[in-house]
Each structure stands twice: as structure tokens, then as C-alpha cells.
Length: 159
Image (cartoon, rainbow, N blue to C red; front, side):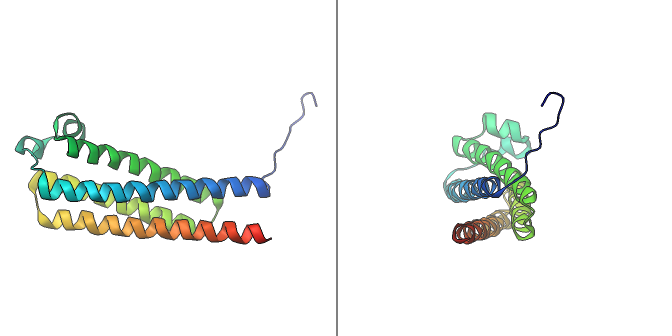
């Protein structure tokens, strides 16, 4: 077909691969959230954040903060990236429920990240609580996304 256009039509196998990718990212986000939650608890209870970090930017916190703070911040960035990937994939699937769950999860992660920055700056217990609660919201969103995609995959397997 010299000069012709070849069209690739999205089919059943492509849709299944997209669903599998959403499932994998949802699972990865869930695992990262649980690890992040644990690191946050350890940081909050056992690791004093130096007062010099109170006015530091994120890159300075990563470079100069305690190791646990650095790990927590880096995992937060990775988690934000995974949440963005999941949102894009969910929107591409054209599954409204999945897209809403992914958007809500990303929003909760963003809120938890902002609360973490506030907590580093002034040590407010309310910011720590907000971080924990928003992490719980994100966990619920990604459990919902994983449940939704698993259900769709099972239904498609029976068809």
C-alpha cells in the first residue's frame, strides 16, 4: 500500500491490554500508598524534622532532610506520577466511574502532599491528620478502581 493509510482499529485485545494496564497501575498505587502511610507514621512519631527544613523547598527537603523524610518525599513524587498515569489511562478507557475514582485519588494524594508540606513547616497536628485521612481516601479510590477493573475483566472473560 504505497502512499496508503493503514488504520488500526481498537479491538477486544487492545481494550483488555488497556484494562490490564489500569489494573497494574492501581495495584502499584495501592502498594505505594501503604508504604507511604507507614513511612509517614514513622516520620511523625520517631523522626524529628530539623527546624532548617521548616522553610526549605521540596528539593532541599529531599537533599538535606532526614533519610525517612527523603524517602517519604520521593515516594510521594512517584505516587503522584502513578496517580497521573492512572488518570490518563482511565480517561482513555472512557470509563466514567474509573476516571472519577482516578481523579479523586489524585486529588487526595495532592491534598496529602500539601498537608505534608504544611506539617513540615509548622508541625500542626491537624496537617498530619489531614495527611492520614487523605491517604485513606486515596486508598479507597484505588481499591475501588482495582475492584472496578477486575470486575470488567471478569465480565469480558465470560463473554
